[in-house]
Image (cartoon, rainbow over all chains, first blue to last red; front, side, top):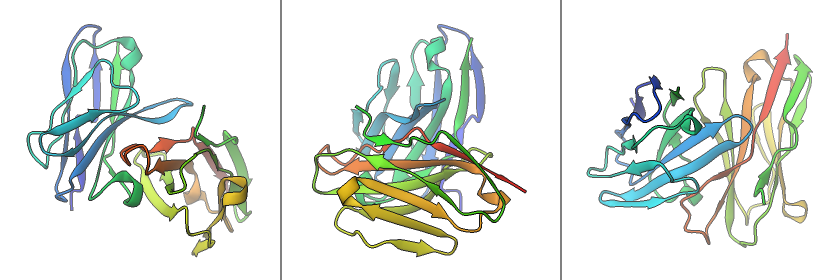
Length: 114
Length: 116
């Protein structure tokens, strides 16, 4: 009963490095999203996908890329890490639109950029 | 403008006390959904409740209850007889159908500490 799995759980990067945060779900959900959580700001949407091959930007997309080649996987790429991207990242999925279905969240990835 | 406001940043109560977490939202949509999520110290986000804008009935689930009032744009959450395990950050969130239904607007959260 895995649900939404995020890897890694923790990561430290140097400014300018690139990396990919992995997200996989085994519930056959069409909708997947990436959020970042910063102190005092709640969660903010970075990118989302309504199905394989379809992605779109959320509220704070700059500096991040996504792709959705399969229903199960939705990786988030940091192209050139910046200290402002230090945050906790959550991946989420839901069967239908966010409006009428609760999202299932992964356990988060804590990312520090030095 | 903040779509979801949780004015209480931190609340501390003694075990067995009742506590209410406030949530005020802002939207021009007539159809929208409101959510509460719990984030315990372990960090995961746990879904608690979803309510659509056409259903103003209050809901009770065990020690938890929710009071939805469209007239004041509020969706408050009450924990009765609080327990130490209730200590967590609680987020209220809004989803608007008009904006494509793919974004949850989260409040900044209320950190609840239940003191034994």
